[in-house]
Image 1 (spheres, rainbow, N blue to C red):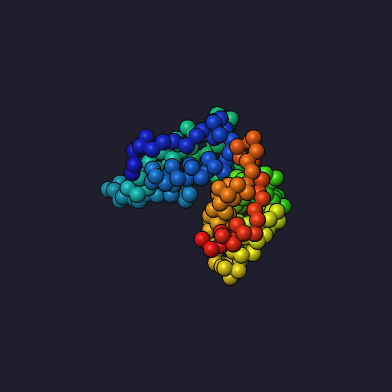
Image 2 (tube, rainbow, N blue to C red; image 1 turned 90 degrees about the vertical axis):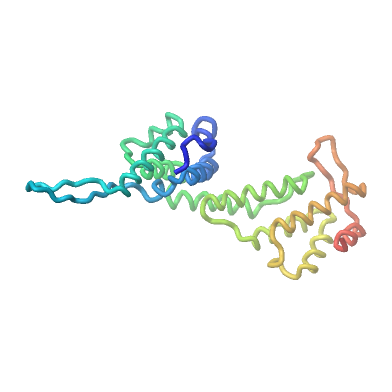
Length: 241
């Protein structure tokens, strides 16, 4: 087992971070590195073996494997206690295992199936209405879309690449003077199945940079605010790269 202090600890949930989804992900990674996530996920139940004696009463002793699981459970319990705030720790009540503590956190901050479905419904609406903001750069737009994708994944409902690609093509098709590039890319690739989201992002970023170099992209006083004025000739140059 790795030493407890061999890796950097996650932020303290409830104090230095209030984003449970992010904390949960970093915490699982941390416990995996320490090789104790298994006992958090599956729980610890003592197991005993019986040894016969000369007396009428046999002796029960904990098995070596069970003792090892107990050590891991104690370590995991200590880690969870130390990495949540005092107010959050009040959720644990009489919990005696790391799994019970973990389940209490997940139930409170992720909710039951109904609450998860409500969150997913909200994300679906957010995804469907997603569009490029006025003057927004390709990088900022893509980062916003990936943030939505991460939220779906954290709720156990990741979006398919095809769905993300379709959304990217639709929102860029609505951009002034970008329809030519989108149509050209679709024609070259044949179907959406040929793309990954990162492929499209690379094409759009490359085109955005070409616009900037050619003087067709105007930068405002705000460093990340841009205006696209792409002529069809640039589209032709772009697809022939």
